[in-house]
Length: 127
View: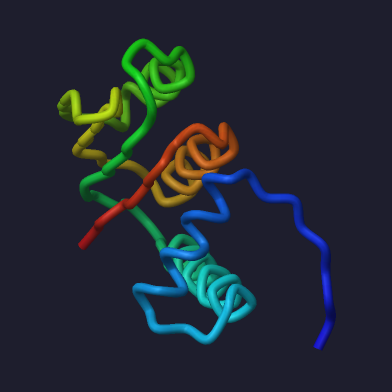
């Protein structure tokens, strides 16, 4: 088993400790392995998409008025059929979008969202 050194923010460490506690894991290394398995599962789900996909995209992000989410919405306006914006506690925002797209464009959209590093939560639920 390899050992790596990783720099984490205080918030990342708090979240890692929550993962450990909620899932009853033995330590932070187990929590990191769990988080990696979850990310790999999400990547597999994305890569398994084919043809036209339709579903609901849910995004939670910090404070209203962030330009990156507007850029995503404009870049993919032909794929986003309906959208809802709601303010949450702690100056967070919830975006709910009904999306219909070819799978390669949807993968690109999800990648663009993740690559900003500004989304607290991203989930695409499709049938």
